[in-house]
Amino acid sequence: MNRLRNMSVALMALGMMCLTGCGTWFGTVAADVLVPVEDEVELGHQLSEELAQELVFSDDEVLTTYAEDLGFEILEHADRTHEALEFEFHLVDDPEMINAFAIPGGGIYIYTGLLNAMDNEAELTAVIGHEIAHVTRRNIAQRLVAAYGADVVAKMALGEEPGIVGQLVTAVAQQGFMLSYSREQERDADEWGVEYQSAAGYDPNGFITFFEKLAGRASPPTFLSTHPTPDERIENIQSHIDELESPGTRLEEERFLQMRDRIGAEPVANGNDETDSDSEEDSDSEEESESASD
Image (cartoon, rainbow, N blue to C red; front, side, top):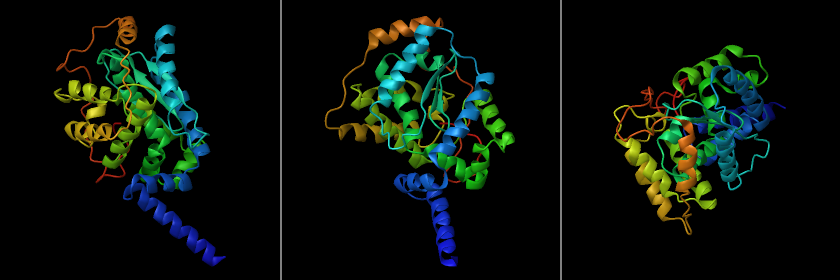
């Protein structure tokens, strides 16, 4: 019995180290051990209910359905190893905020301001694929454990830590982000997200064109305020695209522009500052940060 307990402690310690220092494969395995998918989903339900009270969602059914359909289209080509994950796609009505984020369990939130900063579906599906990858690769579970510990995360899932859940919701409502990801996790989500969107037939170069549009902004949106730097992310993903055997080619520009016109705000011009997100954290050195960008 003591030997079994000692092995369990050792595995737990290894898992904690892998959440912060090992490769993404080991991190995913550690998350599977420390945070069952079912717990992550339960926590996601709580966050979703509270976010519904804080965020304003689009009341345009056509636009909302469009965003949902795109999300589920990319999801069909994503890794579904963790079948218990419950994906939902929400459209937040904020034409000035260039942002998207994922919450535990599979909730993906897309801001109308994001669409205003884009020109085609290849760019939009690049971001959607990235956020889906943060969920499927268990990045969120990894960051929760790194920030709060496995025991606290388990209590959060049971509804026993409303204060921490409230802090996460407040961070999203005020700043548009919830968790910080490590450099390796961001790169991992970039690469897997491109895989997902390309498998759905979309041109993965949409990732490149979108980041190039925003890289020169004085106050970068959430996607560009995390590590690695925009230029590094573009270089990394270009190398990954070059290795794809049959990358997608779809842009779907005409349909996208029709949907974007429904937002009712002027598209974001390159170089303008439309977002108040100026937080930049190095989550590789500050593992216990409670707020950050994705």
